[in-house]
Length: 285
Picture (cartoon, rainbow, N blue to C red):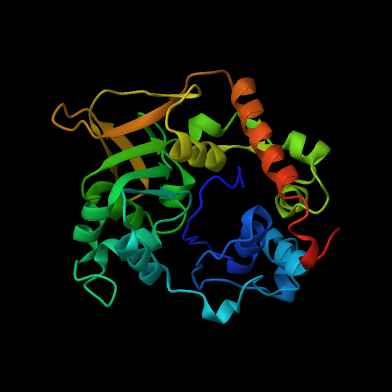
């Protein structure tokens, strides 16, 4: 995690146990999780890192509750949006099944509004790691179900939409300082070890989340003044320079790759050291 600066988050992730472990390390706060998770011997033995993190730090259970009690992803989105008392920023750093499901959702016990109306009412900004700009073909758009990616990107109802393309974080390598100086009890540090074998890693997702937290700041700039993104059925995308659309942007770095990397590394290490003792109850390497 970059740092525990966001106090109320609904985490929607593929491996609930791993995410819960990292969340507990960062803040020991109760964060609702979705129900798509697994922890099996096959994945653990053959190198899948998320189940290893969950097993090593939490004994294979959620630090606060049972994995079986995790939320359905769309229901969780609807609950959190309906309860929000201010504008919400949604960050997408993966595939689009859940956001597409949100747009297809209908009224329920959480809100009388259908998905598009609920999003338009509560979401001020959607931040997406995906695509290439002004055109390209990137894994988050084509790797799972490109039609769902197209559904979300081409039909998002209102608000600001900002895209962080593959070109932004591909040459920004971060995690080196966390590996060298971070506490052994930090599960995010251990994830770098399991996944990338003690090496820093490209920073596509961390830069996207950092923009969502802090805006353009000193690191980013908007690369366009107008237009909109369009995702095709094969998962490729192209920027349509439509002068009537002024709420969509793609990001560029305003600094060099080394400076961006240093900014991320500072935040990683700051978060790990700040909460160095919070994982002791779940095991220490």
